[in-house]
Length: 169
Image (cartoon, rainbow, N blue to C red):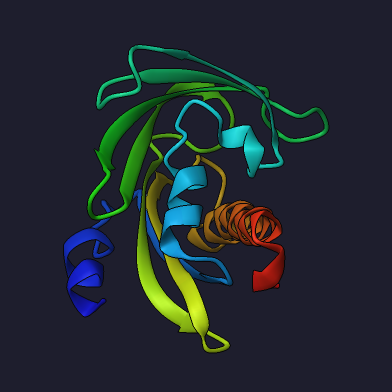
């Protein structure tokens, strides 16, 4: 676990950027969680702020997706590129290329780690990111906003995966 943190979740943001690492425990085996996380083409299955997603490419590194965000948020669209999809180590990373939102130059990496949750096979999900601080915003404002979105996504991921295994809840 410490190796994964050092290798994947240690960032050196520029002076106009901020970063954070969030962790979510999921009461489902890593294979179940990975089956949801790895779907770069269907993030809306657990990211509730996404209305729709269309992809270009064959879902390999370099593929892009166009996301439409649900109404009522300070965003409408996002274009993102798959950076890492490691099926063996359970790592997914993407970066934002463009879009109408506050997450400029957003880069995210998610790693999954086997663990025991209540004496059953579970998963520890770690997601870290680096994002540019928008003009007129503080580092704290940007962290609060971005952490809230990522935390909501991670909690939704946990609920989604736990529903796939009724005995895990």
